[in-house]
Image 1 (tube, rainbow, N blue to C red):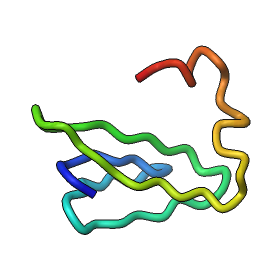
Image 2 (image 1 turned 60 degrees about the vertical axis):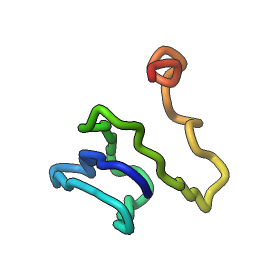
Image 3 (image 1 turned 90 degrees about the vertical axis):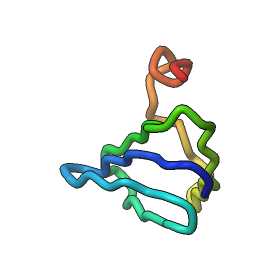
Length: 63
């Protein structure tokens, strides 16, 4: 991970920076936001292979 991200998982809020990790269980609402002027990068792993399947098309197009 590079940069800094604000992450919400369920009702919990975290600020992630370089070297940090976070886990989100299946079915738990989550989102993230870049909180700096610089670019943030992360590695996202999904074991189910169904990432985005339940995301409405309109929401999936948002960046």
